[in-house]
Amino acid sequence: MAVGRQCGGAEQRVKESTLTRTLTRYEHAPHLVFWETTKACSLACGHCRASAQFGPLPGELSTVEGKRLLDQIAAMEGPKAIVVFTGGDCFERSDLFELVGYAATLGLRLGVAPSVTPTLTRDRLEQLYRLGVRSISISLDGSGPASHDSLRGIPGHFDKTISALSMMSDMGFRLQVNTTVMRSNVHELADVVSLLRRTGVAIWEVFFLVSVGRGTAIQEVSAVQAEDVCHFLVDVASRGLTVRTVEAPFFRRVQAQRARFGDDEAREHFAVGELYEQLRATLGDEGADTRVMRSSTLATGDGRGIIFVGYDGEVHGSGFLPVALGNVRDQTLGEIYTTNPLLTSLRAGELEGECGRCEFSRLCGGSRARALARTGRVLGDDPACILTPTRIAVDSLSG
Image (cartoon, rainbow, N blue to C red):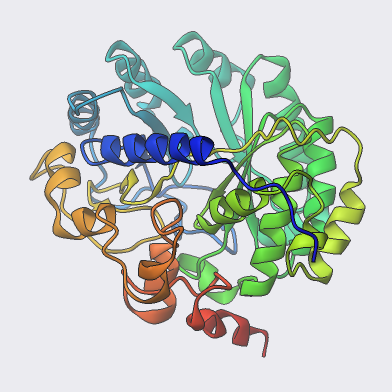
């Protein structure tokens, strides 16, 4: 096996210092607040985390309560959080523009994650733009209609999604595409990259499926496949796309391991498999520049720099972690985030098993949502990581 260039001691100390400052900041306030403004959505996607409905559910935060939540976010310590208005379909709320406008007056950074439905119109997008929204994220779960439309359950939805991306790009929005990785579409990822580059997408957020909501009927990728996908994403990050992952913090571990070598030839240094070889071959080498790696290095995780507020005010570590931590109707979000015992344990790195012993526990920390879904223990091992013995719990799903 070839031996690559190792990180110098000074460089490593700088990285550790940066990581420590980041984690210290997350003790006091999150970097990202996801607000599930409604469960209402006219789609019925097969992998929907929210198990969205065709209409709003009783108990949805009112306009007044929504503004009170935004006040709570603005009052939290440190730099202003990024607030992502999501759902369901956030455009199903008639007061969305009032809420977004109010958030803007508080100095909060804004993101909107609508569904591609008839509610996504140029007029509505222009209103968001006038209110200061510059970042929009929508979902694209395949490189063509066969895979994407089958998940959405709506023929022609893939073409509508591509049209929406083109429209928003022309309007000047910074575009993020969210792609959920599962066994049914994992071999299409390189083709998705080509499509994103053609449509002017700046950020690719790759969701590693966790079997919650309607996603319990869909197969997750195995741990071996997840490792191959992460190596592939490191390659993608050198080709102009900013890459982020959701429920796959071990991507940061792979990225750190790859950074120890002076090349991008993963096959020479790591036990990559056939999936990586296939994705890499399809991706090709055009546009690669390993000196510029456009990927998020923020050490966020469920409840660690990220917090999720449900449609009814219930707070969770993330949208995929169905453990109720409190309600913003009873406590402020800042109080819940800083004092809840589970959240303080997560931020302290009080993890069990291999995740707790791993040298990358502070940088990675594993998916707490997947640990709960597969092992029943929030602080347990992430079975999608090849370094954990519980990976068998995911690998065995292939039957």
